[in-house]
Amino acid sequence: MKLFTTSQAKLIDQFTIENEPVSDASLMERAAIAMQQWLLEKFGTDISYILVAGHGNNGGDALALARLLVSQGCRCKVLLAAVPEYLKGSAALNYDRLTKQGIAQISTILVESDIPGIDNDSVIIDALFGSGLNRPAEGIHLSLIKTINESGAITVSIDVPSGLAGEDNSGNNPDGIVKADYTLTLQFPKLAMLLPDFGPYCGKVETLDIGLHPKALKDFQSSYYYTSGEEIALMIKPRAKFSQKWDYGSALLIAGSAGKAGAALLGARAAMRSGVGLLTVHLPKECYKIVQTEVPEAMCSVDPSDKIFTRLPSRTSFTAIGAGPGIGTDPQTEKALRELLVSKPERLVLDADALNLISSDREMIEMLPKGTIITPHIKEFERLAGKLHNSYERMNFQRELSIRHSIVVVLKGAHTCITLPDGTIHFNSTGNPGMSTAGSGDVLTGILLSLLAQGYPPEEAALAGVYLHGLSGDLAASEIGEVSLIAGDIVDYLPDAFRLLSGM
Image (cartoon, rainbow, N blue to C red; front, side, top):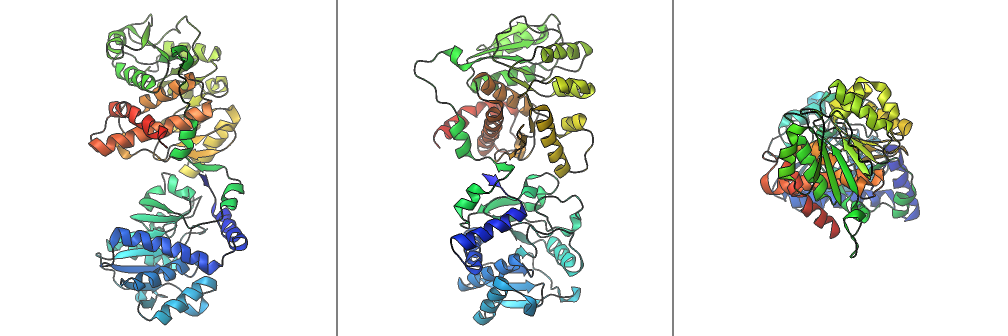
């Protein structure tokens, strides 16, 4: 799914109005109907709704929504932070319709003393500002936002939480943003919702289809994408009836050190469950028996060292190589990693300590073969990139890193951000907080390595691998809960994830 900037969203709205054709008021009505349906399914008609509306189109959405809710017998109170006579266009039209209906209570909020108390057993519909806001909230609007946040009531924001800009919130005031429990975003998520600095303000995000023109959604160019299961399902290669193990690649996983055999074990299990034909795990002697016993399907290559990775295996016919989980940062390991990079493997994924070693010697990043996938978490990324001020700046630096070195960067976290050498940015739609657990990244490395070995292009391997990793975690969490989820559970649910994708 393409994601669009707030300026593009306005153009898409206008394209829909001109080419469907449909009036602006009718498009606003569509949005209000979609929101009404969601609210009634979620909260019903017995609860009191308080709609906080501004002067723009978001406020117009709220006024139309209030009219629809009242028509269903709901108790509604509208707090209008605008002079009614100054409303324009569809917002003015919906204000007139609502006042003529004569049922909803409408209060004009122009100064702080106008702000009423809000019962915490109500549902607040936040529609002060839309995603096009380009400065921090202030004055009466800031006071209203603080009142909403302090009320304790369930808050549902329309399109974005008021006070949140659609993309760059670098200079924003965190106290001037509504802390929503739910955000009903229209047609597609907004970029700020997917970034860790301000995404939490959105609560649970629900995307509502309001019927924007399909030609505009298809033809408008974008650098931002949000992966869906349907897209990933199309990437997964079917297995041929007369195939054999050699058709599904030969992978080398360099992982583990004394006390960290689990990293090699988890990566190996994930690689096997993701369909690789042959897997060799290169590890120090102390890890050999553990991995050989627990993953008998994998072959083992034993390092000369008892405790660390010091030398590449002699065999060079691997279709893909993965390195990093649990290997440590000993100088001998750094030397061996450098030898790996000098050999220029055609398909390579690097994680964990491999990235920490590269961070300690920046010239090594120049040695990465084109198409390499690196999978840092935020701390590992900061070691590579230096301290950055916010997640928006970090996203743009990540994109530049992919372009400059022709590599795929997988920045792990909620909505894992994947940047490709062509400059596109892809956010993942699967995964849950239960996956914030030791070994989860090792599992991802194994999945990515397996897909690379099977011949998936690095870009597809990254998108599909991250999606499958998150989907497996979601399936595991649905059965055992987020708190009890461990990395091995993600591996255990990989078969279900692949099966689910095959049915899409």
